[in-house]
Image (tube, rainbow, N blue to C red; front, side):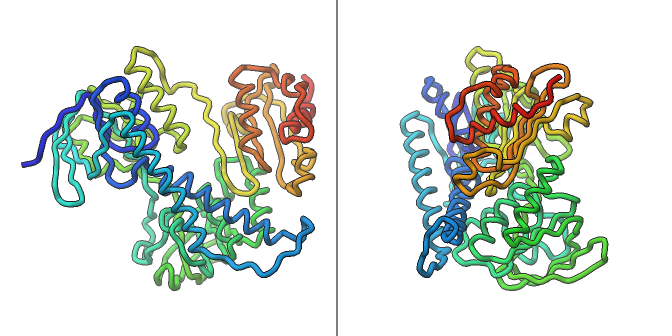
Amino acid sequence: MPDKDHYEILIIGSGEAGKSLAWAMAKDGRTTAVVERRLIGGSCPNIACLPSKNVIHSAKVADLVHRAREFGLTLGSVKLDMAGVRSRKRQMVDGLVRIHLDKYQASGAELIMGEAHFVGEKAVEVRAEDGSSRILTGDQVFLNVGTHAALPDIPGLEAAKPMTHVEALELDRLPKHLFILGGGFVGLEFAQAMRRFGSSVTILERGPQVARSEDADVSDEILRIFRDEGIEVLLNTDLAEVSGLSGQQVQLRLIDAQGERIAQGSDLLVAAGRVPNTQTLGLQHTGVELDDRGYIRVNERLQTTAPDIWAMGECAGSPQFTHVAFDDFRVVRDNLTGGNRTTLGRMVPFCLFTDPEFARIGLNETEARRQGIGYRLAKIAMAAVLRTRTLSETRGFLKALIGAESDEILGFSALGEQAGELMSVVQTAMMGKLPYTSLRDAIFTHPTMAEGLNVLFAAAPIR
């Protein structure tokens, strides 16, 4: 018979929200357990955010080496070592996992490795890899089970055993010709990194632009940058059928406005969205409802439709960013400890870690027009930011939306060097409800990237 244990706080999944809640509640004196099936700390430190940025930085170094003459350097022969790229990434991940284990020990929260399946309203059976099992119950239960890469229903795709981002981060070889299905953030980041390592890369995007939720000028500039780097991007192209085996040879039947054709490559990476990890949890035993896409229904306090059960992070339909998951934790923590916090009205920044980066906070032009919100547009080329000239990184632009009848900053987009850091400056001003003139007239250090905000907001039309 399985052992049975009871906790005040029972958390399924050790991602950003789950682990943060576990450490906080355990330090507060509540008996706390976290069930994690595989990745201690969740996907971010193991197979997603941090490992991908680690590999992307290796690719940036490779690009700088290739550009050495531009900076007045003459180098000898240079050889790529993909096993070395992977080793650097693995060392970072191992260190992060050790940090997580230390935090569990210091907090007093119990970390239980195994697969959780609900057998009652607030009871789960946890099966470990060795076949043993335990029944865990909780006064309050929190779901933080995340998502996984979607695999579209395309004939032959599953049989071809394509990579997702998980397998791509474990490559110890260089794909000869990598096809990437999807022109979203994951596809774009991997496309540029693998091209800089030396792969031929083709992106297949069924829509009319990459980064489909962004303004057309952003998509067009990313496209120009990618094509300048030798990345092939096929827009308005459907993948109809796949044959072969990724890692050896794949044949792709493509359909576009010109008809059908066959393309061949060595590897296939699928970056076509995410699916919530909710189907095998046994939620039918709990009263927790799912929406039509399989995400857990929650209210603005992240409570599910079942008493004393909450959901946090991507499985709850929150924006799929680690920083949002951390805020989900803060929402739940504050409400558990007497506060009153919700997810309503959150200002969510995000960054695409291509080179140069793309970052945005608030509205873009497409959203403002869709919502009928009037705005004044300020826009400058990154070359107008003098710091970029010292770095030989002048690609991209900055733009801001300012209220048509006020001086409120409605949104900011940056495609350029250190875009994420620039965005944070504007976000801080927006959080403080400062008028755009505060940034226009601020004294920023010369020459820094932030100084470009003077130039950008000076370009705003006067109302």
